[in-house]
Length: 211
Image (cartoon, rainbow, N blue to C red; front, side, top):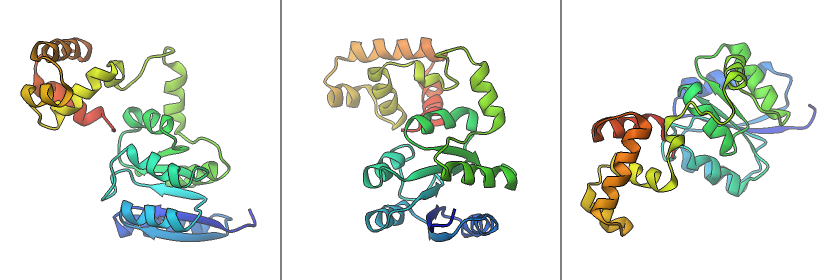
């Protein structure tokens, strides 16, 4: 790799950024490294630069989880995104890869695995851990580890409003639905998610929903 690779390290913890810089400097890559501590900074860089790779913490100030991926790609459609996070791979990796990230690596991974993740995504190949790749291989076709993926678009819409603290009246006014219709959707979600009350339903959305 002789040409310069412009790489953004997007994380709000300076010690994490320093560690990633050290790993990049150990690789045989001609780097132009740009550090960012907020998502607004990432977008400004993308408006003015053409990064080859963004090593992205999805819990970055100013960002909105999965929407961050589309916000980057609409500006830089050829940019490679490696999600670098403490979020559980089993729960979130598949969703972020479907949204356009090229790789997903947990911050608790070994230095060797993080280096491999960087090198793999730079060559335009998908990276996930060997353990998670094996789980995907063993999983039945169409089965997801994320329970909310079983919900319809309308159920997702109502569930997300509930998770934001909206009551039935607010939701009926916002979506133009009858109260009885909202109740029907809630009962369907209770059944699909195997819960019996709103508090448990909201807890599942807060844990598994990356929108």
